[in-house]
Amino acid sequence: MSGLADVLVGRLRAVGTRALFGVPGGGGNLDLIEAARRAGLPFVLTSTETGAAIAAMAQAEMTGRPGACLTTLGPGAASVVNGVACAYLDRAPIAVFTDNSPVGARHFSHQQLDQLAMFAPITKWSGRLTSGDHGGVVARIFQELTSLPPGPVHIDCPGDAWAGTTGTTGTTGTTGTTGTAGSVASLRLPSSRKPLLLIGLGARQAADAAAIRHLCERLQVPAMVTYKAKGVVPDAHECFAGVFTNGFIERTVIDQADLIIGVGLDPIELLPRPWTFAQPIVNINPWSVPNDHVPFAAQWVTSVAEAVTMIETQMRPSEWNLDAVRLAVDEQRRLIDVPSNGLTPQRVVEVAAHALATTARPQATYSRLTVDAGAHMLPATMLWPVAEPNGLLISNGLSTMGFALPAAIGAALIERDAATSTGVRARPVVALIGDGGLLMCAGELLTAAREKLRIVTIVFSDASLSLIEIKQQARQLPPAGVALGAVRWAALAESFGVAGFVASTENELAAAIDQAKAHDGPSLIEATIDRSNYGVMLRAIRG
Ligand SMILES: Cc1ncc(C[n+]2csc(CCOP(=O)(O)OP(=O)(O)O)c2C)c(N)n1
Ligand SMILES: [Mg+2]
View 1 (cartoon, helix red, strand yellow):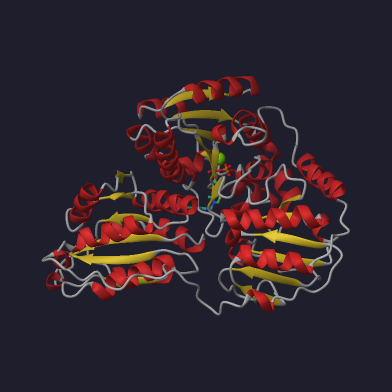
View 2: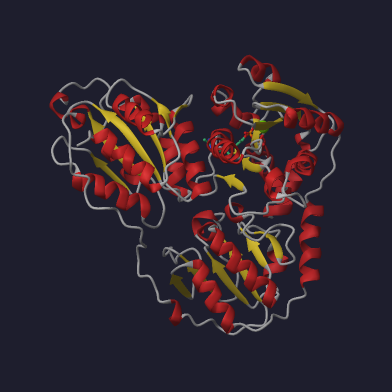
């Protein structure tokens, strides 16, 4: 017989959860934290609840197993909402435990919100523990957490639910797919001479990547990747055809295709613009997706790896000239290499990638990258080479600011565990973030310091909400509400116990990165950039 908190933590451990993040309140949260301690599940205090949910989400993306976080009632529950929304629109399975007052105390209105209703639109399931038989609820939680599409689950925990013990753990949750899982045998691909793969977030398992690379190599088929699918086909791969966002820059390659095959393509990742491609498009994904944005002629809801292996048998070697595709991707990089007077954002990415990214290095020294929302994301996603699925973590479905640092914390904890178990030094995680984004999550620098994590945060310090500023400029509006003012980021970092460096030239940046790499704990590099070329860059990419 064990308490409900032990049952929940035991089930989390059993499904592969690696840590519990959060900012505790004084109620049942404390039972969960104590149960986690007993079970050896680390509890990681974050500065904000949304930071906790994002760290949990990063772990879920890296491991393919549910992440977990907890909050107090009322303000804690309200504060985690953006992180939960992020997991929802970025399709990541996380368990979100919110405290609540005992059901018998609901006539007190202090700190009371309708928490079930608050999370209902941003979770797969928002439910409540009961003080009686928990079996059914516990089973439902884990069924939702481990079924597809992946997404967050909210568990409201009234104070009186923790009392007593239970021997009932409910039926075991199952891993399955929603929608009708089509039989792979029924897959029939239209014939084509120049098929193009568009790889999305639904194709990030190692087996998916292996099957996709095999097809591409054997049949000489090019593959474009969404932001979240970067690394499934590495940037350095002979079949890599660039990044796909439903923007402008990728059109020259797509227009040459006579068939588009979505692999794990979920329109949640695409820019909200009409679909203008005339070729037929089909999709293979583990869950069904809406047909109203992208007009899929057929959707096969099934295992990506199996289906890709199956369609490979139906396809002939393509008529693509992959050298020409490679040249087109090189041309894209040239188009965004817009000169300016100072340190350019694209050179920040290139100098950092040269020192820290994946190309031509043994796996052990790769740095995983996290990227925030903002103009700096444009060069980061195009220029940073990624060689493995989830080698780049980014919020794309929600595209929230304040993502990169807490995501790096989730990722760095897993890197640290992996290093400890193999006796090597942890791979650093690199967080690229704008100054506006860092203002939203700077408190997590202290989390990184407390946990002694190898995170290299590079701030694109431009004293501006640049992405919004350039959109204002494009509409010929005067600047308003976009000037941030200067921050001494390196000094702020030092005050948290994070090693701080400043760089306003490429040489200074390279030197700072060397020092940051050598440093054992977290570090921050304040890269003072010239933001004047972002407008041209945005037009080149999005038209
Ligand atoms: C939480 C959140 N608030 C607002 C936005 C809208 N938004 C997108 S990018 C951006 C500016 C980002 O500024 P900064 O972090 O400094 O990056 P920069 O564009 O300067 O590179 C804003 C306000 C958002 N995506 N997320
Ligand atoms: Mg900025």
